[in-house]
Amino acid sequence: QEHRMKKILILNGPNLNLLGTREPAQYGYTTLPDVEAFCKAHGEKIGYEVECLQSNWEGALIDRIHEAGRQYKAGELLGIVINPGALTHTSIALHDAIKGVDPLPVIECHISNVHAREEFRHHSVIAAAVNGVICGFGIHSYELGIEAVAAIVNANKKG
Ligand code: CA2
Image 1 (tube, rainbow, N blue to C red):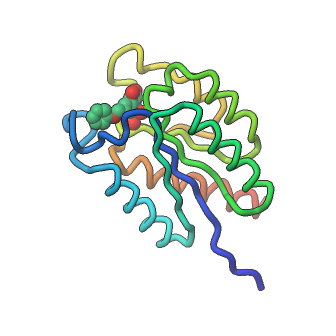
Image 2: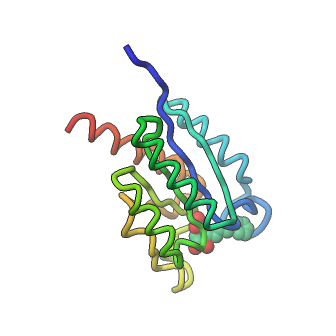
């Protein structure tokens, strides 16, 4: 019986390395290393290995998504939870990269409720390429994202 622990990838985009150091009113006091530790702990609790990457470089995120596509095909990765940061509102390249790895499950997540903020944050160019979007639950948005990937994986198993 195969009992390999399966992996979920957490991607964070530009400026999320500043988490916990500025703008606590918007993003809270928790640092990115803490968020990543929570994600790993939550994954472990429900039986998934969690790997995390943050980059301020659009291309680094795109390269990692392509690699994720290969890992998905090889049965080594279940899905991605991505907070693209401000690239959410601008990056067609990230949209295309996510489309390019379909049907790899991808959940877009945001710490803040982007719809309650400035008009320029209301539109996501990423949303149309992903399975679903979670926003506004603070750092718990990531855990909900992990749950969403797990739900998709389990639905595919049953179906
Ligand atoms: O709410 C979210 O998670 C966002 O994706 C965060 C992005 C923002 O551009 C999106 O509209 C919504 C910003 C990430 C920058 O995070 C910082 C954290 C602390 C201090 C400064 C920036």
